[in-house]
Length: 201
Image (cartoon, rainbow, N blue to C red; front, side, top):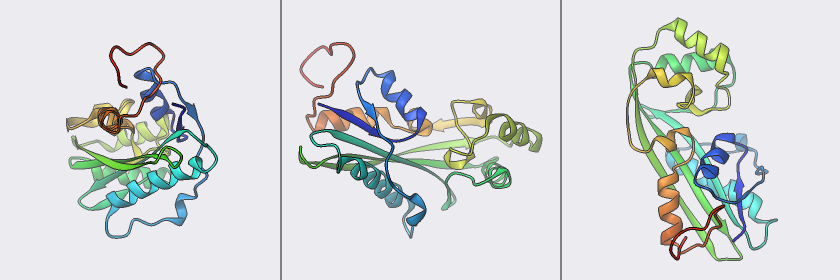
């Protein structure tokens, strides 16, 4: 089965490569600024994942498209990608000493194969109290402007994390475990670099 990742995120690409999947990457043609979270941010990130996948599926006959979107919630406050250094700093100061939730919406779409499946995963992340000089150092050296919540747990900001409950890869940007289980449940045959022992996937 031809697999396409509809995402410009290098981290999602790396996570799928980590499990040996063979796939192409196509940037989704979707202006996220046109969509608003409304009363349910989790439904919002799932809908964005679905729309990203469908924007690629329309021109990719016979392929299975993966769309994804990640958001950070803290006390019902939605934190997406920061616009500038000031917004990034404000987000990290708010997350300091708190537990927040990382939600990733994932959508598997293929009109030709009659696949229409969208789900989400949640991980709780607790930050210790972060000093202002640490926040400044992080923003200046790691430029977290393409990351929801203004941090990437796989880089220096790992030193901010005192505990995590749930899927680590979900915080990086893609819930590999839930994706794999969903693919198995849907009986979809994916192509791996090395032969997979057994029938499926």
